[in-house]
Length: 272
Image (cartoon, rainbow, N blue to C red; front, side, top):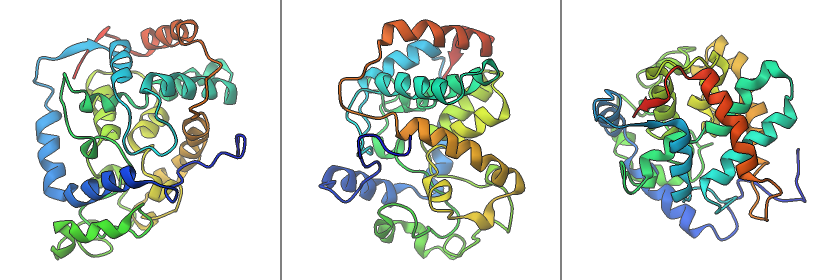
């Protein structure tokens, strides 16, 4: 799966004007204070909003990710493509959790749904990165951080910032987006996915680390051990993307993932 028809993935050099505009907004506004505000807004789960995980996947059909240079298909296509790629990579029953993670990993993008939370896409999608310390030059469109207020804050603009060597990513504050929200939704609703699955969901957009090895000084031994799972997942996530007519019948695939949802989620309806 290293290459599909010589297609390049995450290629931000070829006519990426809209993606560049997205990251200008993202890198300007994703400050430590903004992330703190968004966590207060969304992680109390007190909005009285409930619907099933499968409904969330269906609602993703209304969202096209502005940050993604690889595909303009609605998200439901990517969910099934990634899930089917995971099934091919690890077909054994003991990896059913991995299949489900690939299928649902982007459910946090529900934050951008215009009839639900209606958050701007720069606050939902795109690569994630730590806040509270200096911004790595390995982050895509790094030059736009010059507009971020945190670069002038002495608490946040050094290598370690408010953190320390080997503190572990679970103790680091990340830019707000669908990764963290999805992770918190699953934890709040007491899903029984293994730790590896939850870790993948929480950090699958942390490309500066698992692609460029940035922020290794903050990683714990646990984070280093999880890197192999992130790399396995990225092969399913990235290399399943294609805007060609996919040879997958979504309606035929959905029952498989519905059964997995029933297996790993104690409640049909989730609190959002």
